[in-house]
Each structure stands twice: as structure tokens, then as C-alpha cells.
Length: 69
Image (cartoon, rainbow, N blue to C red; front, side, top):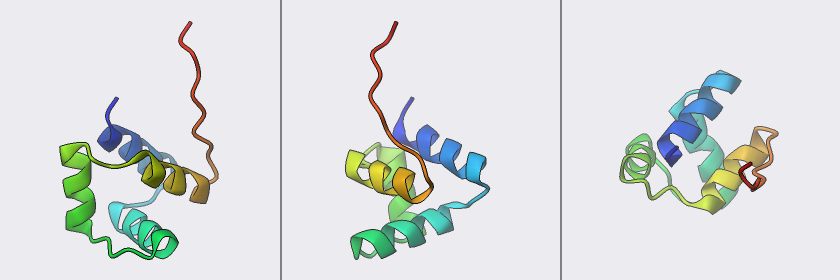
């Protein structure tokens, strides 16, 4: 699963939109995110692990690596 699908899953499970993700990331990182920049990162699969952790933490999730069975 790529980062676009993960972010979409977070959005669907929490009932938020990409605009909300942009606001979360902008507030937490103090960087200027826009809808277009977020969508570009997700399309190019350049959304970083750090960004994913910030989003997950803000929404009350933990990203824990689990070994496959």
C-alpha cells in the first residue's frame, strides 16, 4: 500500500478531508502545505514517514512496524 492509500484510509476512518490534513501538517510542522502540494506528494509517493507519524499521532493512531507472519 502506498502513502496515498494510507492517508485516504486515515481520512475515511476519521471523516476528514485532505484540507484537514493540510491544516494538521501545516500547524504541526510550521511548513506551508497546500492541497496541491499534499496531493502532489501523495501522487509522487514522496509523503515522508515523519509526515505520516505526525498525521497518525494527531488523529490518535500509532504507526508500529509489525513483522509479517
